[in-house]
Amino acid sequence: MTSGGDAPGMNAAIRAVVRSCAYHELECVGVYRGYAGLIDGDFKSLNARSVKNIINRGGTFLKSARSKEFRTPEGRLKAFKHLKDNDVDALITIGGDGTFNGAIVFNEEFDFPIVGLPGTIDNDINGTDFTIGYDTALNTVVEAIDKIRDTANSHNRLFLIEVMGRDAGDIALNAGIGAGAEEILIPEQDMGRDRLVASLKRSKAAGKSSSIVVVSEGDQIGKNIFGLASYIRENLLDYECKVTVLGHIQRGGAPSCYDRVLASRLGVGAVDALLNGERDVMIGIVHNKVVSVDFKTSLEGKNKIDKDLIRVADITSV
Ligand code: F6P
Image 1 (cartoon, rainbow, N blue to C red):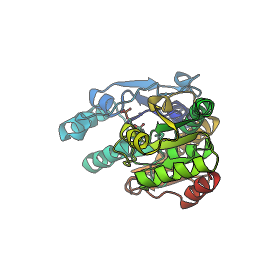
Image 2 (tube, protein in one colour; image 1 turned 180 degrees about the vertical axis):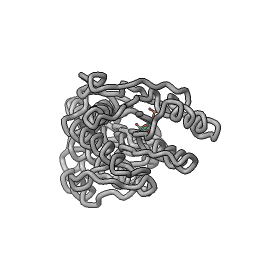
Image 3 (tube, rainbow, N blue to C red; image 1 turned 45 degrees about the horizontal axis):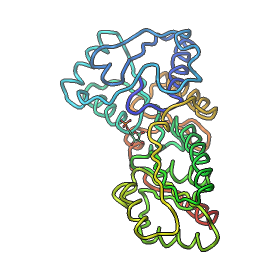
């Protein structure tokens, strides 16, 4: 099952789970539309051939949803009944923090074995170095910023570019370094509007003719990116200031090779974990090794940002 926001590589993860089941001679059933499909009993038997030609496709062929009904005891009871009626022994769910929160509650109520895979572009899950979809999203963002840079440079403009990451600045920070941004605004660190303006004035004085500022959607420096742009227009007359919100293009597209391999390793790891009697865990990657982490640990606020990266961004943007 895939749940929450889709992420490139979810199909590769489903494929790995289905083929791992075939390899171990286990029956595999796909659940459509995440927890919503679990409540409706929207199931379909899957075999090794059902997942052909999907490793390269973005999105999730099982579809995804954010289900309000699963937050109610009645909704969860319906889901449990469908699992029992279909003789399902265990569930593998691919998603982010909302998905794992749902899994914890469900397991507490029905003692049902669940293993999770981290699938979200935000990279905001604790206990794994990378989430499925994050690498592809970074590449999409860098490619988009490279294009915007052409216009910024041709017209001597300042561009504020909003990227996704509800509560996490990982996309902004890493894509910002990769695309050579002058400033990067992330929720984990409040730069303040005046310091931002002062820094942009300094870089203009240092000879820069255009500027790129990457703004994480979770950053609150200017309430939102358009409010921030108005403030900059009033206080920095050196540049014409433009705004681009990248939005959902960051969630789509063919997964990178890194995400395909990660998803394949974690999908195989999820079936291995269930066969080893593990439950209530997420399968992640730490120092390039597949690991199991209990769901509660995976949800323990991953709001630490790598200070080294901030230093690298500061130094390389002088
Ligand atoms: O959690 C992944 C994410 O893409 C966030 O970065 C973003 O805030 C959110 O999902 C958007 O969700 P939706 O597609 O439901 O608007």
